[in-house]
View 1: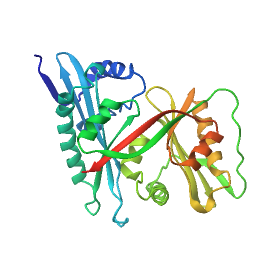
View 2 (view 1 turned 45 degrees about the horizontal axis):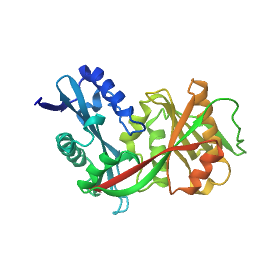
View 3 (view 1 turned 120 degrees about the vertical axis):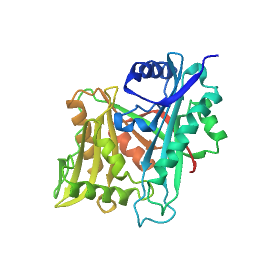
View 4 (view 1 turned 180 degrees about the vertical axis):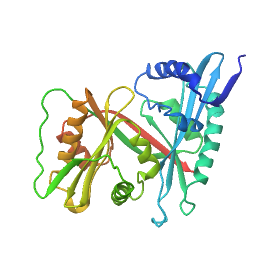
Length: 303
């Protein structure tokens, strides 16, 4: 029997990684995290058998709760573990990767503000039944579902005008003060799962990343982020309008700006995620041409 080596990912592993990705995605929709740059590789573990990568796992802090937040809010650390299709029932292989991932998750937890508890979670396409079942056996329970929505960027797009006194600008958050202004607004919208500094910095490193914001005088009232993923598709994330400024067409205008930007830099389609239970957001995205293409289910447990 060939031994299975479990170790950190290195730059020499990209060819094997590409082969694993092709094998995993050949079965249809899947949630497969890319390894990111070298600074992220301490969070990435691979399983190698002979000369083939047969599995990969990685872990990341998804949401860090700032000090002073309500006590019931919890940090979120998520992991992603994938195997070759012919090994999707090999729970021994899952165990070999899950152990170092869990240990790394505890290390990441130790660096988070200790006043709040931490959740560990996973997200899979609804069709990835065997993978999800493994995590259920480890004590994970259902948390929520999200649609991936897609909009093709061909032809003319409807415009959504912005009335005075609002102004929309493309904003790359060039200053520390601007970053903290954004994080404060994001925290106001999603107090239980804010983006946090670390994830914001990771997003800003994505190809062609930018943001658009709407201001009333100097007040930030809404925002959207956009970038290009590894497959060349546009990504829309963190769409928000603060409560006092809603129902004025600001979100539609922001989405139009982001979609136009992605189209102009060569993207043929754009994708975003939204909770399946968020009827108001679904209505907004339908109104600007997005359609559901897949569903991700998330499971969590206390860490």
